[in-house]
Figure: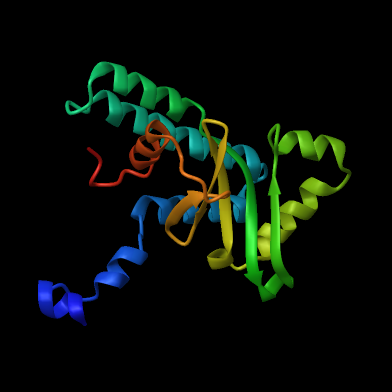
Length: 177
């Protein structure tokens, strides 16, 4: 009320707390489609992530506002982006309060060591409600969950400036410097 009267700003708190990134939502939808329809959904999700990263690298190279050394450091961060797992949070359709499978050495390392884990993981993701599922990407050795059109580090710690900028390019945010 104070903000709307003093500064003529409607719903400031709502605008500040809800960050919807269109490309993040689209990535989630595309990954969900891949999981439902692909013969090799994990590899297809990896390709989807790599394609997003490649397009982001092109946008960085075309960014006149970034000095060459900053472009290079952001591109290096983009080259580290990988699909490392998924989370399902508060989903009654799979009776999960919280489920997270994130590979330290990639998902394949887990699947190679634990019998039937790959099939169970894919079954869980196929059954879970999309709004309760998150992709977990790694960037610069940090995990970032992409969920409900938003993204944030899974450990809630701050990412490096280069990683933050790389993610803004990755998700094609309009307000990228």
